[in-house]
Image (cartoon, rainbow, N blue to C red; front, side, top):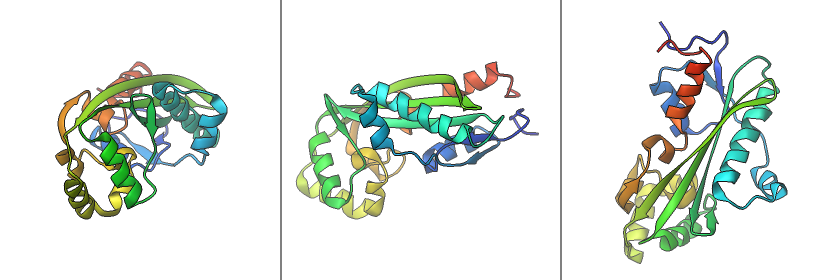
Length: 202
């Protein structure tokens, strides 16, 4: 018997491997359908600069975009930003940019803002943002190069050039925050919302 009680499958507006894993492990019946939006254009046109507000906006826009294509279904959008002080980071375009990002983050504490939004029929029903603070250990240039050798192309798939659930864990000395937030989806608050909607059996 499924935990999910919705009349139709939940939709995740993302192809993120980590987010899909989190929903699968939570026993939710869902399908993944990425939102085809220009994130950088949405961010630029919004005029927002605070990392948490940007993550919240993008999560909401993704959920709304897909919900307009899937009438009656609950759609989950999510987004994550990385900020080192006032400086925001995007996914590195290649190895050289990944090395540059890691050089800037090494020995510093940066913030991950993870946002989740739920929409239905083109209307946002729920939004939440959570923060994790990540302290990367000091890294010599040779250590960064060795990490990049081992991690390969995966470094270009995540902002900050790391996946904490993989080899990226070797880069850190301290982490403050929720595990789900770090992986890009504030799962506990999402589950609480779905429970309030009567969509979960537990």
